[in-house]
Length: 340
Image (tube, rainbow, N blue to C red):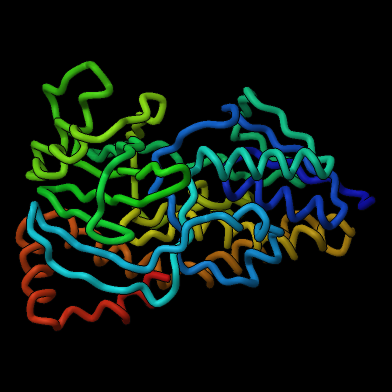
């Protein structure tokens, strides 16, 4: 057993996958998680751009074996179909409700220590502590909403809907459920009943046809969830803090790359952390090396997403995108490469 243990704050995708890989390498790992499992999360629930080598390095293959493989995409503006396309590689679709629970079980079966209901002072940064505790709260005018629906016929494997200052993605996951997840500008005067909030947001942003489809479907009442305080500003890592996944930075959700970044950040930090556990490098140098690897890996896609994000939220840029799509001049393959 290695002499130096690792502590991870946060048991989401980044924290659990890193913990799982470290346990396979024989490292003592303790994960402190504020919530519990299983749980629903506001998330697109499909993974794009994840290399097979990352899946194998993190020992994820058996956990993703039954994930749906989606390639067809249909883009809508309001009720109008704009474009159909095929992804260069299949997106892996599995709900966070299932995937987080599987990761937690695999980690503990390997002898990892997972403590739920734990709150940690994030100002404390002892050697060997990794932060994978999700996004940093910020002042923001955006809200994310999500629900699972069943009996919802789709125009393609994945649907993406552009509305006024909003976009929504639909993705089939396990057991016949479809994940409906969207980003909206915060509005006032909405009903207090959480089950009515998403339909109201859809109607107010011009996606009434999608709201009607949702009203006719079966809804999982436990799947309703929301998240506010969303900031997509690019951030630099603190020099004394190793942060992964959303704790490092958030990429706009239209990319379908948020889950992949969480998993990739775990893989990128793995070798520097293993070197530290063996006593080959001190902690400040470990953080510096790992942060440099994360910056190199994600810099281009974060910049590309920051440029494109406003085009999906504002009416005039949306019309430009729609026109380019109808004329067949929208460079979707280069855009996909830049974002992944």
